[in-house]
Length: 131
Image 1 (cartoon, rainbow, N blue to C red):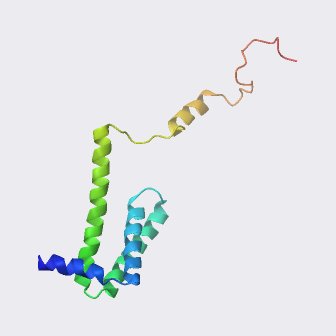
Image 2: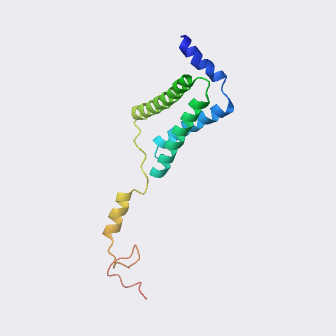
Image 3: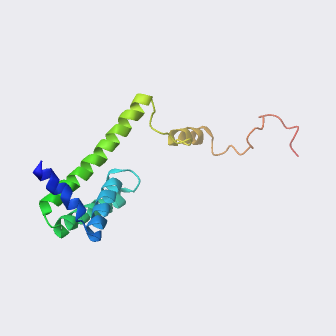
């Protein structure tokens, strides 16, 4: 237990720079794993997360404690995602779908011919309303 008490004791002696680097590492990791950013943005997030993690370990008094703390942070984020996923599966939630799915738009676009210029809702052969 003395190993863990040393690691948790290093949390109390963290500086503002270490906190900032740990925050950037965790947020960068979250952005790199998610689909919020495009591919280039995820690469940048990976670079920021790795750089901040390396900086955090470099600035820390004992780099092994810093690596253990970063491992706990990544494992904590992973377990949070797993709990949320299991909860959503248990409650029967499905993946969110957009109201304008691309396959519905493709079907609508392919059904209308490019020469079809009559207004929507008009009846073919009904010339009573034409000027």
